[in-house]
Image 1 (cartoon, one colour):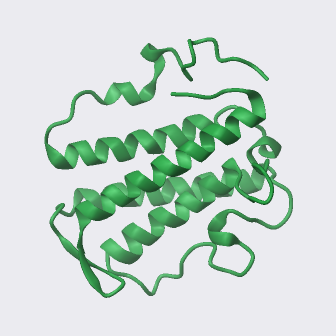
Image 2 (image 1 turned 45 degrees about the vertical axis):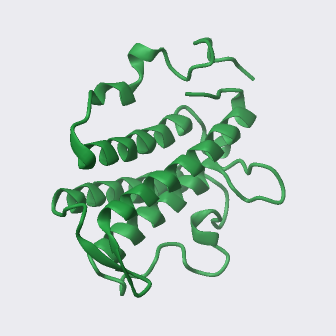
Length: 182
């Protein structure tokens, strides 16, 4: 186990990519800024690890791992932005098959190909989500399980989803190599 050496911070503050965004203006910029910061946090928590480390399960009986979190968040991005905001519920949900547990499980070992596939899926869905947000407004109504909901509510939900899972990622990473915080 190692200590990051930055007084409990993940990176020196002047090297944190989340600080590059600058101040936000207005509700949309603020919400998207928080969403982007959490997306970056997930990436940071996974940096510098081997496929085996990324696939390390947290604590029994949980099957949660950093790799599983990346896969799960690709699924979440796809579901909310493609299926709900764009209105394409016919698109099959990623990792819906029995035993895949919404992306947390996978068949075989965590290897380079599995890791690359997970990051590619996640990056494609994040980029698509950015495009969707660029073409909508916060008060746009979408159907969520038969009920109208505003896009702003879904962005807040995405922030909450990332915040919760980044907390999980922090704990998992700390168990792997001692790095935590920020």
